[in-house]
Length: 157
Image (cartoon, rainbow, N blue to C red; front, side, top):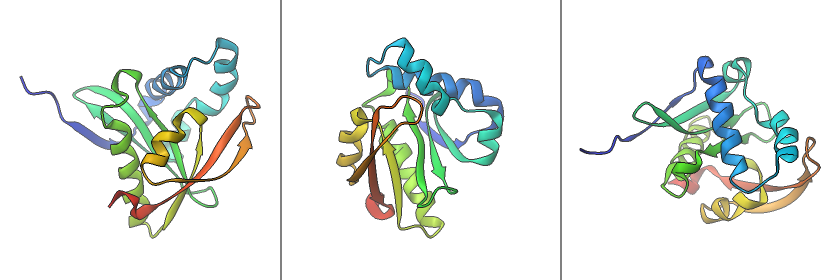
């Protein structure tokens, strides 16, 4: 039997709980403790309202959502939004596919780059895809340092 292909599509509001659970599982893979994860959840949980207001898409294999990502067009500059991959699908190309999809969507809207606010553990992935580090900032929910990156929308071409 041939494995199901990876499909990228817009997120729908009814998937809010499923996407939030995936995001939290993905974040927890870095070994953060329960108190940290409770604080981080404030920035990571996605509501139906968030999905309706954001440009979010999912990566799906068969009937299983294996990743989520999007673009926050309200940010200045526009920002890569919530790029997370289910731990069972890390290092399988899902993250790269989501990132390249976001870059192509941003490019189609006339954007030349996206900002990325990255967990330090995810930085090597973004750097491998052409991003550059431009600074750091404190997470409002955890106080931990997050990295500020930039990536051009033609990095996926």
